[in-house]
Image 1 (tube, one colour):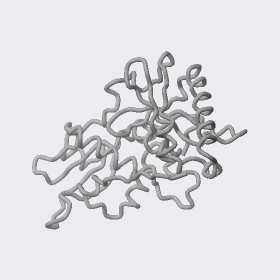
Image 2 (cartoon, rainbow, N blue to C red):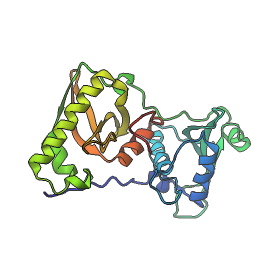
Image 3 (cartoon, rainbow, N blue to C red):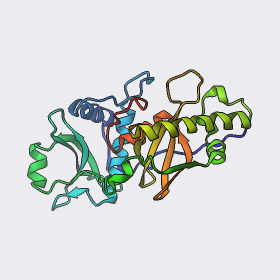
Image 4 (tube, rainbow, N blue to C red):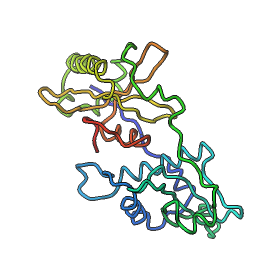
Length: 264
């Protein structure tokens, strides 16, 4: 069975905007400052904060598109709201200084800091930027059990077979189809009785929903996340599936997932 892969690499808009000296140390300090959560996947051999780095890049991309990167009057400083808070719910910002090296990024990362930081307040006063807005249509964040779910089975298999469990890679197409259709039928029933298993993600400039696909016999754990989105008021469709790592990265852009099946 032929396989196809997709490039989900970040475009690194943050790196184009600012030089990031000692970035690993800065991100580690941010992780300690923020309300505690897991920023690495459970199988990571070393702590690299890969989830947090992905979150920062995509959050910067979103706030930049919304015009929520703030600049000082003399353009010597810039900042954006990370959307993260301390354990005492104080907002955390990324603060940048002007890069004086010709031909390089216009700014450099000074630090991640609390809203009460003296330099941040002195420079920006009350003009601190707001968080990224993912909630323009709150109804998109919940699965509507009254809607139909019509998956594009051929497309899901042909474009994503490399993401399926390794035990399925040598199966014939008919058997893969049967397993996938069975998993979708099961989750279709589950989400109609418990809409909370559908987790919102942000990808491709829109809100989509993630549903767990259990493809391994006798395993209670999801193998993949089915990506569904509305095509009209009465119908969802699904054209792709994600590994659980991909799904968590996308879901974490909106809020820390509170889920029994999608964990880092």
